[in-house]
Image 1 (cartoon, each protein chain N blue to C red):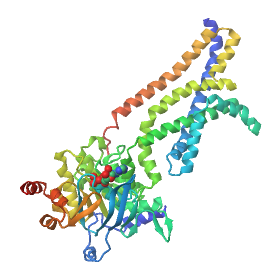
Image 2 (spheres, chains in turn yellow, red):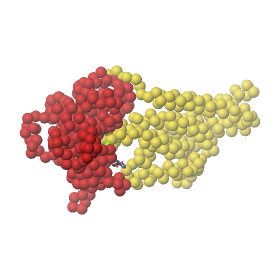
Image 3 (tube, rainbow over the protein chains, first blue to last red):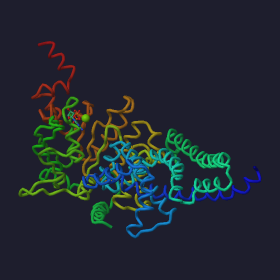
Image 4 (cartoon, helix red, strand yellow):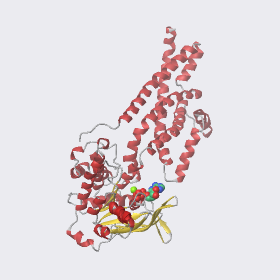
Length: 221
Length: 295
Ligand SMILES: Nc1ncnc2c1ncn2[C@@H]1O[C@H](COP(=O)(O)OP(=O)(O)O)[C@@H](O)[C@H]1O
Ligand SMILES: [Mg+2]
């Protein structure tokens, strides 16, 4: 058993690296794309609002796997062929952007309207109000839910195995067909996911407690 | 640099003296009588979901004048103030501040939309003090004061910091420069908020029940700052329930009731000769009650 573990563990760890990479990249894509979507949903422009709303509802209404298949198997019909891992990053990123935009939107709406008004009354324009007053405060509101999203995303990366992206689940499937030890291998896989998720979870808890404690203490000037 | 910032910078730097607040020169005072009013509100109506909050209100405030706005809760004082600042869009009527029409308008049947940039420029000249302070919680007292000059006027930090510290000293909080709002009392927060407005060198200050959210023992320190501001010639439109303060500081008291102005005049005249029962009830609640019970 230990002997065998030595045989398949390196391959599994390879999968861990791919999973981490997939998660980090799709998280970054989601986090970046989500901001314009959230701002569009809060925009005074009805057309922008509608488009952003449609995107969010559409993406949230279908399984992320559908989006992955669409990108990996569908896009080649339009002459766009992607590596499985890239298709997975884009698919999970586009999917995540819909969820994260809702997190951002809630974060922005959580800021008291008096903040916007006070900023407007010192002569700030819309963009300045957002950048210097609303967003710096919304970041604090958004961190914990964003961490929870990252944990969900980590687990979601496993769907990428279905388009043969070389992440952990795919390696595990390969290994089970080679060594016929599904129990041991999938337990090991579960432990790996857990080991990745736990630090994230404690980070979320840390951020939540920081939020409760409020702002930093007096700053020297 | 945008034209907005340039214009503001010019206005700001045109004043060489960094004394606080922009004191009026003898010339300004001479011109006061025939100067156009700083605020002109004409036939202003505002309703919320069909319910009128302001019903055909007209009011002018001259440069250097202190006007106190009184009236029972729900009479439309806040709405009027917010319409002047265009935080509320009037249903109809006109607001002119410092010669500039505020908000969208219709000329020859065509709607001319006021741009974000133009509105921001007008608001730069109007300071507003809110009932709930609305300090920026993620910034220290000093940073709250400097944010506008830094981002709107595009001044350098080392240019504005001495002035910001001077403002803090003026409101008695020099020792709290590095404190975040949550570590300040309500009265201290409100004084920082006043300093934050003054940092933009406004032509006009609007106060919406600046002391109503304060514990009674903290009211005086804020009124004291406002009193000082009035003494230095600032144009002020003050919504307040502090009648003694209004009588003492205001050049004119305006009485509102059910969305209309029902009475106005110099404090002494209003007290001696109230034309509306509301005036009497607000200015001298005890006497009004006595009169009622006597009759
Ligand atoms: N945002 C709003 N939405 C709906 N009704 C409002 C709003 N703001 C004010 N009102 C109504 O308008 C009237 C005037 O309110 P307000 O100007 O706040 O009075 P005051 O400041 O004199 O107490 C009140 O009846 C109030 O309920
Ligand atoms: Mg009010």
